[in-house]
Image 1 (cartoon, one colour):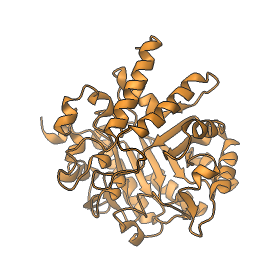
Image 2: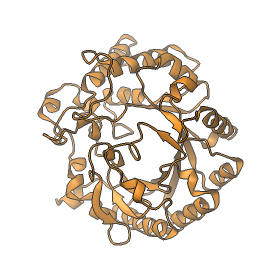
Image 3: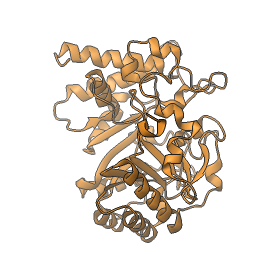
Image 4: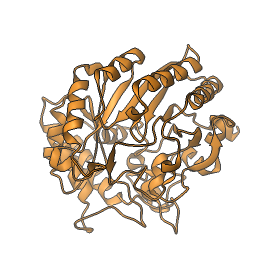
Length: 378
């Protein structure tokens, strides 16, 4: 059987519909990291790019017999593309993909520009919306300020409350972990908005540029998320999921993960930039200049060309084959999956390293698994 026959097709297509942002998050992997290419890309995606991307998606689903795909509008801040232009983009994408294929639209935003007009558009195309918010104002504004250094919290909260008026459009909240914030306070604050999902993420870091720690000898990020787990578990009134924790629970039970930050399943997402260039994992911008570049675009190249690009071959390795030797020996590898790809990088060994969050993931996984055993769930 050839490599082409065994490759796992893309199922999530991330369209960078806007490549500018109205706030200036200091941890942003697009504008404040190693690779600054996004600053030189078109401010918004043109309809010609959207049509070409849709045509390529249609080819891909036909070639691989897919019945449904996710199309995620991302940025920058995708709402900067404007309601009318975004409506045209959505129409171009939907029209370019065979009608027999279900297209599940999503959008990730900072929420500050949400309006009734946006929600009306999302209703028309059944776009579900995720909002980024790191916690209460003091926590959120430590990193997520406007370009003038002002708070973005009130505007984001206003957007979330507007979105809550149409709960079927509310996909959930995305928060970046900051050790300076109290984990239970952050979790409970976010939970009060009644999101279906809270998605916590660790700040991007590499072995050459590791994340901040107050005490490098302790698994501080694992301890932080363990306190979130305890708060989430101990309050039966909560109905939301916490994606990282649910993935650990599922993987500990032998079920595959829903995201590519954990587990051993090959990732299935691909990025289309505002100029039509194709990238694998855009968070690799945090690793080094040019780490995301494939020299492919939707005008001239298929998604199968990206699927088999040498830079993405490690993403197609099933199981632990692509991981560092230390990871392959670890009894937790089926759950942590070696950690998220950008967090494994070093200039000396490339991606053949354990995650910079290895001790944190190990602590958190054992904490969750121990809880499951105590409750008789495993």
